[in-house]
Image 1 (cartoon, rainbow, N blue to C red):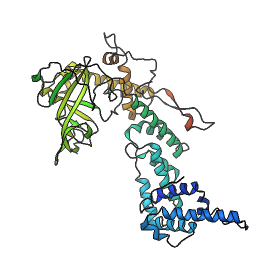
Image 2 (cartoon, rainbow, N blue to C red):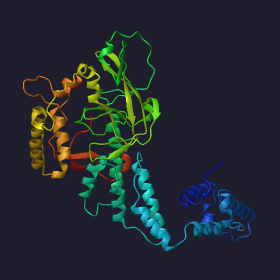
Image 3 (cartoon, rainbow, N blue to C red):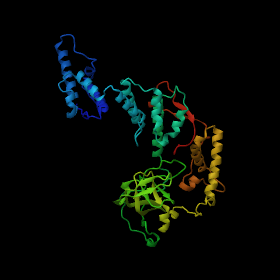
Image 4 (cartoon, rainbow, N blue to C red):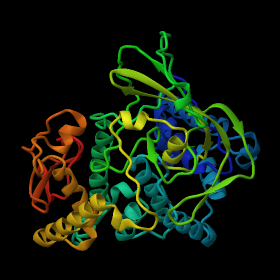
Length: 459
């Protein structure tokens, strides 16, 4: 079986060395390269011929997988052991400069976007092994610290839990197991976000059907409407905007923002009639951060309205890849005279500027939330740093119980489905998280003790 690996270059020795090791093991030559297998002492012709054949194969394998620019380093050497050591000395010199560079790489190692925890941990271990070979090992404590140092915000809960561990438990391998389990839970949580449809942003072909009559004067400026009477289909691209469940919206989701002055999108593939622009930027409300605008285009949105698929074209949508959300400007929709938000049950109530006290409904609920958070944190014994978890947990329960003279819960009024309350537990109570069989040894416990601070999207 022929195997090929990437040629050795100036910047890939670490990965090339690992690949070459596996390739030599496959060809039964690795022990010769490391010197653990030497020339047979007896004069058995068959064994001697086999050893020399594998020795030549080891050297040719190494030489042919080095780029032509660096073959001169081992040119003239026929011993694979000597060739391997020569490459090691050339690309990994045992110098202070290399050790300092590896140490800097270790403390600046960050997890990449969409990178799995296991891959990130493997990169850290690779640097640790190189420092160990150079005679400057990194302590176990620093390895564990680096593993949780630059994790995304969605891991904040498990990181706070790990911070409370004893020093004996604060080990790299154990932390890695916890992070992998949490990563699996987060992936399942995102996958389960299909309970309710808020908006649909779809690029697909829809069978042509006669348009129903609509008032062209009710849509102007930045919205062009078309309505198609067709059987409602479940789209694979359905997104949730239920704020009490999660803040991790899909990047394709669209959020209605009445403070936005324009429509914004972070995905170029959603834009039609795209026109690139230069020297244009926008200011974000939070932190006065400025984002560059790369282009302008049109986005076609499709959503369900009274059993039909409603199609709306958003014009002059600004494209900025650095945005985390796609935004629909509520002010532009109002200026265009659109009523589709009212058809969906959304009612806008105006207040005077800089007068939050006039927004009595929101302010009263905020007051209720603050009181609930204080009680939950005090009764559970958790610190004030868990106020966000307490807020989400209270909102989750609040939407699943009846209020006032209502006979239906807010969740059922919104989604049409009666929620279950059998899984509700007291905030801060003892919880046990199951450990997958693949992540535990024979005598390890099947679950780990923790603290209940909220609910997943589905239970």
